[in-house]
Length: 177
Length: 71
Image (tube, rainbow over all chains, first blue to last red; front, side):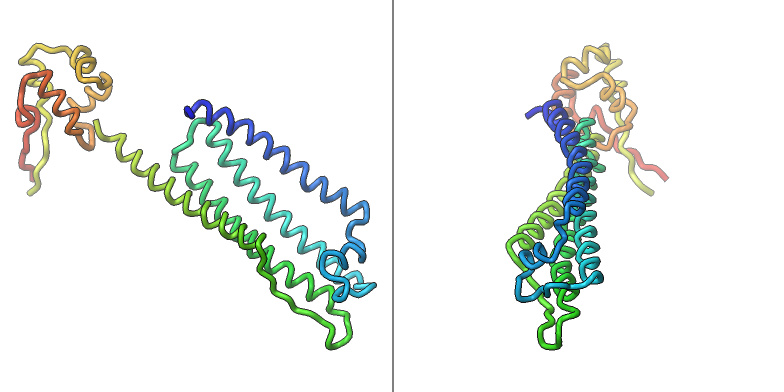
């Protein structure tokens, strides 16, 4: 695939990602407004036995805060992807700055994976905080989603390092005739 | 004391009466790169380019490059 074709595709994808950056938070806001954050939903997601019928305003706010943080981190990752695609769209596919974009995406994905894992622990602890002693819960889970996220983050970071080295070599080779 | 590599390409080109444009086309590099090479403003020369230069100018690498001691 030629650089021009890559740039064309990258520009198209950058526009799609920009659309997602606007659409995802809007969808989340609409979902929140339509009452998705009710007790029934929490019991479905985190287990009927753990979440009380009335978890209280505080735990529900913690849940919303953690979900907002995770969403913000996800948007940050998408923003990084958009930056990378915009750089590729300008034809700077193998440049050093483009490689830095990839490394940045990798680092943000690591943060997202950590937030995903820690977030569940915080939410479950908050939701069961008002339960009677003995029924409060502190759960740490590491599932396939977190595993895949970390794997993708590691691969992106590695790819970014490889690209940086390639860009450095390309720059060095420019001085040779 | 250190040693510097001086490119004598302009001297050989003058001796062979070869124009920059013709030589660049013959060895397959741009005139701009040939100009940079003549002025020594390059990090290095590929063996491939050196071989083409030697073939085009009918000379040896030693005729094009010279090591000069500098202070």
